[in-house]
Amino acid sequence: MKLVARAFVVIAALAAATLAFGFVLFATSVMRGPFGGGERADAIVVLTGGDNRVVEGARLFAEGRGKRLLISGVNRRTRREDVQRISGLDLKSFTCCVDLGYEALDTVGNADETRTWANTHGYTSLIVVTSSYHMPRGLAELSLAMPDRQLIPHAVTPRSFPVSGWWLHVATTRILLSEYLKYIPAVARLTAQRVMNWKEDRAIAVVEPKRTDG
Image (tube, rainbow, N blue to C red; front, side):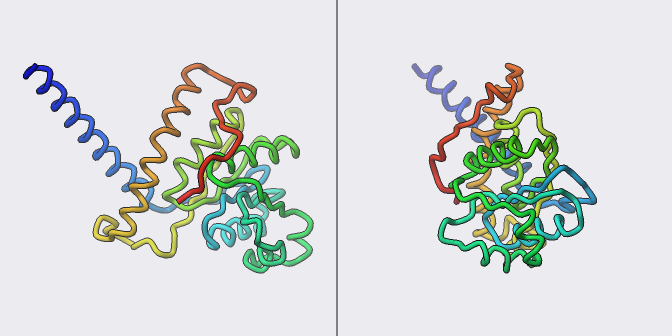
């Protein structure tokens, strides 16, 4: 029994150390810039969660980086004219080429909403705009839903994040840790999908949203 108990302790310690080391790598990676360049694609998708994401997506669209813009996960109480005002785009451009997705309640929902939109328009490449800490999980869920699409990350640093020394800021560390723990199962599912070489019609993607992003 003592040997079993010791083995359990050793395994638990190794698992904890691996988890902690992985978190440090994750946090360091998402806090490092720059997070986007002069990329172009068929279209642009913004995963909502902060006004600066919408503004950045609108800027890329105005620069001609994509033919159309999807803002996924818009609060159902938010009016179209409010989003247009936040984006900074003129009414003509916004009316013509910006779509608002009201169905997604979380990142899985974003992926499903984006897949439907991309299929409708026949887009094969997308610039993905979201916060830097959310980008790994966002890409994982989008890849799960759309294995055959080209996804180009364009991350935005939240205004509240420190320029350096994220580990000295409790609020930032809490956000990063929460996102890391959500990212682990997403990347595990993505790895399983790629190992099995599943295509879009068999993608491991949950269609119905289950939880609200934190």
